[in-house]
Image (tube, rainbow, N blue to C red):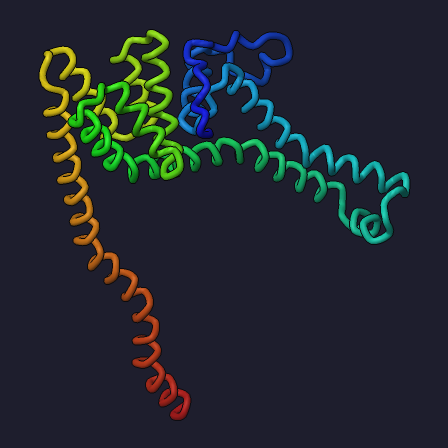
Length: 273
């Protein structure tokens, strides 16, 4: 993601897997669509993103076993350095196979784990920047700009502060310019973001345009409501702090209290005994 804006690849679906790829990539279109949707959440919106993801996972899973078998073969031919050859020679074949199996499993599951963590991190970044973006869009529309122009302007301004949100807003603006239905583009953007605030924003915009109400008034009310929800969330976190601090203090202080209380008793018991 850079300042040049995202590439518009929406609608370019990857073909069904053929040949050897059938054993690697799911044949179920809904399963492939779900994986591609998850990849699109972190900015990988290429037509072949699903194929690249599964190829990467297979490569990581096979890398360590291939290295283990290669080292074992080189050890038998005596081509390894002395220290490494001794280490391989002292390790049993069963241990080598166990190491290969463990790292193969790690390599297979690491891409999925990384994707999940990346989605959570991206959702957190978008959640933090979203209220400010809505304030900027509301101010821009109130100043007389059209909705599309306001979205494009805010996306440009947020490119350095929140590139994830800027990417989504730029993609929304490019999709509508390409002739895609605005309602579909808004709700797809909300689904990619994965936060309730974005879904509410899309609903506010769609309802305002469908019923012909003032977009400025709708955005102003929504921005005020979001600020109130943000304040309530901060208050909720503040109210949870005493309970969380009590648990931490209990874990840290109870061992010391037990030590202070029981040490004299133990010393007397030893002396009497």
